[in-house]
Image (cartoon, rainbow, N blue to C red; front, top):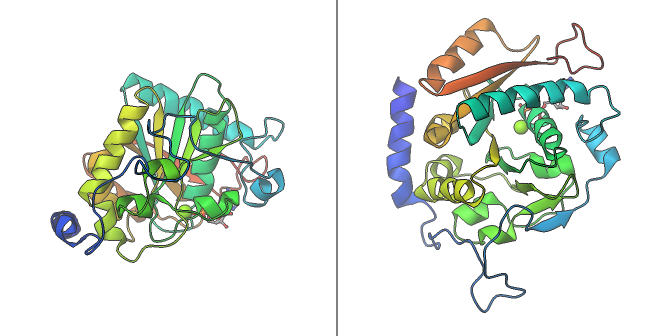
Length: 276
Ligand SMILES: Nc1ncnc2c1ncn2[C@@H]1O[C@H](COP(=O)(O)OP(=O)(O)O)[C@@H](O)[C@H]1O
Ligand SMILES: [Mg+2]
């Protein structure tokens, strides 16, 4: 309970402390005199195109873009479960966390996102919110640019950070982060963060928004962000996560719906290290 109280305090203080001396307003588009301006904001499919190198993806254990890879099947099953549960409950946002670092959150969320992106009728937004240890851009080999942290600080308009990988029908957008933030707790608890999530929801009311979050037991960022989430997926790692880690995580997640627990890194029944 102490940690929940502390997170609430951080959230209250965030508005006053965030980005002192910096613009605070969340910007969606460039100013009218900006270069190469797109005045209408963006919709899914509107963003910087990015080619993803298959070799890079494989090296990072990202396999779900390749139907021929047997490891992609586990993610197809996960995708089906996620869709069923999200549409049954009319959910739009899903956060992925784990008790501790290194359980495979980023690997799982990227595979899940790519698996969803292969479906022509679906649209998906993937947001890196592990502000202390962002990994999505480096896993995908994206060239550096402004990220979610810059949008929250008012340094970049939202439309400038959107990356659209060349996968599926272009209804897959990524909001990456390129640098770790020192004031992660304030950024994630800020009103700009809540505003950004509202905007993403409004821009794609029938799409799914996935958030790659930090570990729930390590920092309070996840607790601060819970009000923005419809549900949470907990990734646990075989040989690393303990039963008490799981129950402590469930306790901290409180009333937020835990959609499921993904057992990662298990060797039992593995086709190639990706059993679920
Ligand atoms: N199923 C798996 N089998 C083996 N190694 C894995 C598996 N999933 C993830 N890893 C590796 O574990 C490490 C941590 O994964 P990562 O996704 O970065 O964790 P997190 O985002 O939870 O900190 C990475 O080196 C990743 O390649
Ligand atoms: Mg990660």
